[in-house]
Structure formats: C-alpha cells, structure tokens
Image 1 (tube, rainbow, N blue to C red):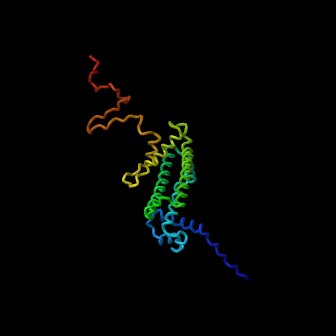
Image 2: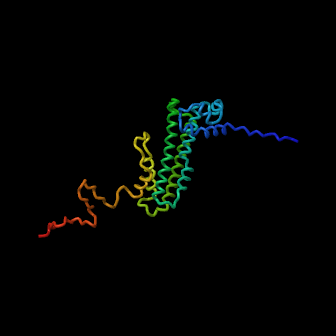
Amino acid sequence: MITPTATRAAPMTPDDRRAAIVEAVLPLVAERGVDVTSRELAEAAGVAEGTVFRAFGDKMTLVGAVAVEGLHRASGPDSTRDELTAIDPGLPLEDRITAVIELGRRRMSSVVRWMGVLRALHQRTGARDEVPPAHVVKFRADLAEQRDRQREATIEGLSAVLAPDAHRLRVPVDVAVALLEASIAGTHGRVDRLVPAPPAHVVADALVHGLVSDTRRPPCPAAGAAPVAAPDDPATPADATAPGTPHPQEP
C-alpha cells in the first residue's frame, strides 16, 4: 500500500508575505502607533523578528506601510459608498441623517488616527529631505487621487440617503450634502476631548428641524409668581387685563 505524501504549501512570495504581516499588525499599530516594538510586531504577525526585518528592512518602514494601508481603508471610496447606500431608505429622514453622522465620525476618527501615526513617524525618523523620495511622491499622488474618488463616492452616497426626501428639502441636494459634511467635520469632537461632541441625533435634529422653533415659549416665571402667557397665546389675548380692572379705553 502506497502512503500518500503530504504536500507542502507553496511558499509565500515577498509581496504576499509583506501583505500578510501588514494585515496581522494593523490593530496593534492603530493602538500603539510608532511606540510599538519590533518584538510586539513579530508576535502579532506570528513570525520571527528576523522575518519582519527581511520583509521590511526596519520597524519604521513596517509601521509606515501599515499606516498607509490603514489610511487607505479609512478613506476608501468603495467602502464609503457601500456603507452610505446600506443605510435603510425606509427610515425617517432624521434617523438616516443620524446614521450618516455616526458613520462619518467613525471614519474621520480613523483617518485622524492614521494621519497621526504618519506624522509621528515623520518626526521620529527626522525626515527633512528637500526632495522627497520616490515612494513618498507616489504615496502623495495616490492619496490625492483616492481623495478625489472618495469625494465622488461621498456625494453619491449622501445623495442616495437624501433621495427619499429630496422633494422636501429647502436647499439643493448639493448644499444639503455640504451641510452634512460640515456637521460631521465640526462636531466629531475636538482632538483634546475637552469638549465632548454633541450626540449625533441632536445634530441631526438641528439639521432637519432648524435651530429655532415656530412655537414661542414663555419665559420661566420667578418662584411664586403667576405664570406668564406667551405673547401669541390665543388663550390669552395681548390686551387682556386682570379681572375687575377697567380697560384703559373704558370710561
């Protein structure tokens, strides 16, 4: 009887090896940034430190590759479009806008995180070249091209979110999209977190219903004072007087 021999898996190509390592250490670099150690990276990737160095040369090169990949994912046009168009069009407009704001805040926080890693990496490595290396030039060009595609995907996705209520909008759809984007960017929370972001549903309510109400509210009366009626309260005419008090025009 012939015993079948076990077949060994084909060895990974250098590009596949690098991609696998980047994928494995993404969460770790997102958490630790440039302070992560080469040992931690190797353990997260399930390889020896020597494998990391052979694949990337040094720790900072790997951290940079991970940050670039993380930034691409955080601002990817395809995922942006898919997540926006996945919002249930049957929900009330205010609920759909709340979902948009929550999604936008998550994506913006991720972009800010990865940009912070790249900035820290630049400072840590002391890169001061007047003429940036070719790979940096390519990265910037790729990022600019992706930014344009991400912008198109955002407009397309937000327009789809607003479409069921487009006939109710007081402004053109492109203006509504711009207001949504400004609301996300301006209310996702300050970097220092000293000023908490207002809840997404509060921002959505203000966008849908405005900052003022058509119904006037009377001022709160002082303690022990009689309630003050609203000026336009139909139950209390503006020229009403206290019981038993003659009207100024009466004799």
